Image 1 (cartoon, rainbow, N blue to C red):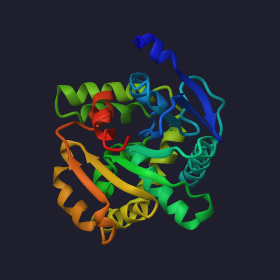
Image 2 (tube, rainbow, N blue to C red):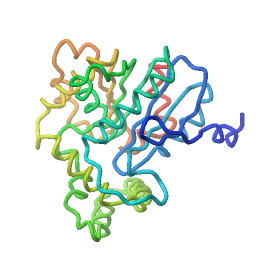
Image 3 (cartoon, helix red, strand yellow):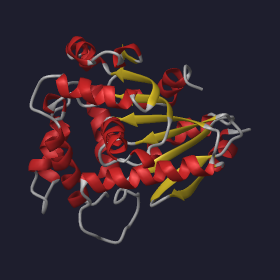
Length: 279
């Protein structure tokens, strides 16, 4: 099948209350992707289109769909979690017997942590996860530079904040990656972005790794395996992250440090390598 034909097989749909992009296939598993802050399901189109034999669904959080949207009040993080839980329940109900591999990037990785906490409080709504794959989850507020900037921005004019973010790039590659990121979020409702930034910032302590370890242990209660893939700048955090996971969860939670930058984690090539163990 040609690239154009493969791309044509990636189709919009809804899952519960959320819009998604889906590539259907008769595989024994479904990969479900959760995107980063201000982004949407389109970040995973390359993976969906290039894995013809793999059933995959990329979810877009409410309020972050591309294109013109009807304005509505900012959505709280707790509501995003409940809606994502409903979307996953709908996917599981439609596909009985298929193993679910849940992949979260950046904010999406934080959502995986929070979904597990939600399921711990609402056991009847839990969805069994074969493998949870977290790509650059936050560890504490020290890894939340973008969220901090957006949380403090002037909502009437976020452009100076976007410029500060662009100026934070430490080289040409980072500058290109941030420019692409800003081009993706520029058309989104900044009120939604700011609300989510403030809520997720409040979710994390200022420092330390204990809360991360506890949260990964909760994910391990619902996932057979939990794998955490990290971009190169996370090298300083890896020892603390590893030590923070309590027993017995430490036996099913693993970490891998890569040489990639943050956004390099979601290229088709990277995702293919990360998910090869689970499919």
